[in-house]
Length: 223
Image: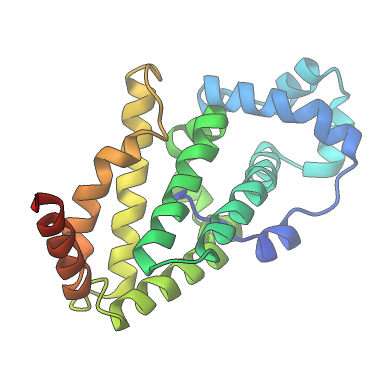
């Protein structure tokens, strides 16, 4: 959830064709230099040397380091978008599908912490916000549709706009990733969702969800 934000119908259009050999050489280098260092200190010649490629080759495909970085962000996020949308397309209540959507993000960034560092910590957001890859349009659009379905069904509170509820999930995830990174990744990022779930549900659940929870609690107490 980048502000995990980036679209692959739109991302696929954004991720223009680059030779596989160039992607394979650059991918680990781009992850390392941009996740380990200051964005403003990275330069194309350093990337070329680390990748064992000529500066002219990299420049021909990307023109500058911003285009290179934003291309790779779009490239990395195609995988996340697919799993996030698949989670929303599963069976179950709106809240259950949203839970799977959020867990898909936790799982992706736990497996790709360098991508998380770049997106949440090192990329200049003011500059990235001018790029189409920032918008994460299709996952965000589908998430809001599921939220609105839940609002109509009474599972999710309807006195708050679906966009604000979507922002709540995004903000929660961003902060959780940052604290996981700050604490040295000493625990499972994905497992944090179990602790966060009651907080999320108590903030967004509607009357139907609250009644289900009440009945579940009552039945659990019966001898």
